[in-house]
Length: 310
Length: 322
Image (tube, rainbow over all chains, first blue to last red; front, top):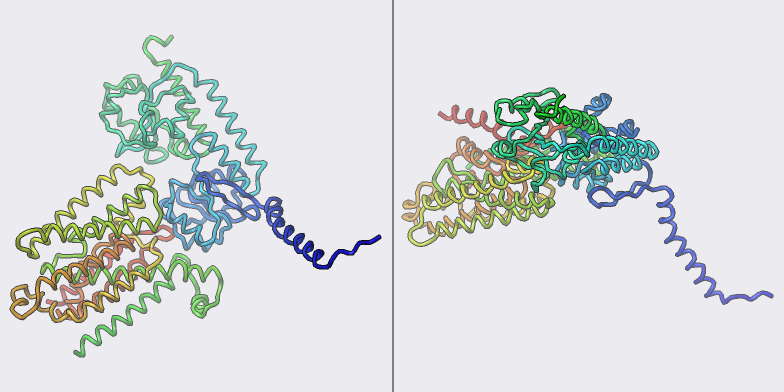
């Protein structure tokens, strides 16, 4: 009881089947083996397989890659990538503000991780135009930082490690928050740069750390992320604590220079805190070390308030 | 006319060698064998993209920028009868800089930055043209003063933009202001402008020679001074706008190269203009090669190097000519 189809129909059927398979195949394959991620600027980055030769265009990106166990995948980085110590031995492709495209190309990377606001956008676009996948990273807060770790570990195929590290970071942040965030508020000025005088607003990662410790940033409401402020504005705000970095890891001069303004509450109470810049001004898990320093110091400042001591 | 032929021929040869040298040298060193393979149309894909996609457009852009600025400088010095005139003296670069910095502040890409730099340069040209023309008499002094004051106005706007810009954007802007070729990718238009202006200026050579001696003499010898001056002004402006669009405000080349050429080749504009183009191109090509290799992988803006190379050469020529 066999019905023979007209040959034309059969052929059409075969062609249709082949067409469907042909259309469907790439999607299935990409989902099975490829890595598809949206970066911090909303661009989609697709890798056929985990990246083996990564160029990192910022010190914090280098540090995050090492942190998620992908340090051995880095083939090039930029100046100031000094943590962990192994990072200092990596070949350089320029400084963050100006990249040597020849050096990048010569390392034959299969992924470049750029810092969206730290690298020149036009050069990053040029790298992309040369056919190298670019992932743009721009963490703003602790949660985004944890997310960056997960993303970087997915791109390099160390997924499990990245999720563990991200979990650790969030847990540490939560511990600091539950210990300090609810304590009596301390009005604080954070100095990022000396000349011109620069601070940060509440949107900045350091702003988040200040809130974590129960501090109130006196310039938190300003619209710019890293506002330039006048000396007068700081004197008028009269913060209870002045914290900041320096031009080097051990340069206390900026913080110390506030001593000549003895009308400031911060100076009278001895509340001047130096935090090594790489601990707090770099978007890495070490910011929580800086935060721990800050939280403990704010607690001391509370204890130094007139009438609050033993 | 024997000597100019030798000079121009020699410069053309030097120009080609400087470009070949710049193509062969970079922060990644390539073997002569590798370079030859790329030239023959084969070779390692990495070497191909290094030479053809990164170095070649940049070398062509550097040569064109140097040539454009030097010719513009030579024309301005004739127009204003002032040895201190340079392509930027009439404010073209200021207008371009304001245009470029505003688009950089808005976070735009290369094409938009170049486009608005060119628009700013043209706007500034028209502004100076209109203001200097005004009512009443017109003279090089009036044009010079108008240009200088308009340039000062642009300078104030540039400072304002720099002061309100977030620090992350500042390095890119400063490099643009110092002159930087790392974004120059499509120098084709600049070469066309250069060739066109040199072609158009060639028949004007004799009149320019007379004009350089003063407008009265020129008028007495039957040159239509007013018309010639506007033509020269427009040529200078278009050359400068094109150069600035390509590479930002590279300083020094446009001021010094025409003087260098005059010290060696004499004062005939029919020689000075093409010789300035070649010398400026060579100087900037070599300077840019130094800029991208001297402290590689870090990069310097080319404007820094032009002065470092040009000052001693100029002082030597000046000393020798006495």
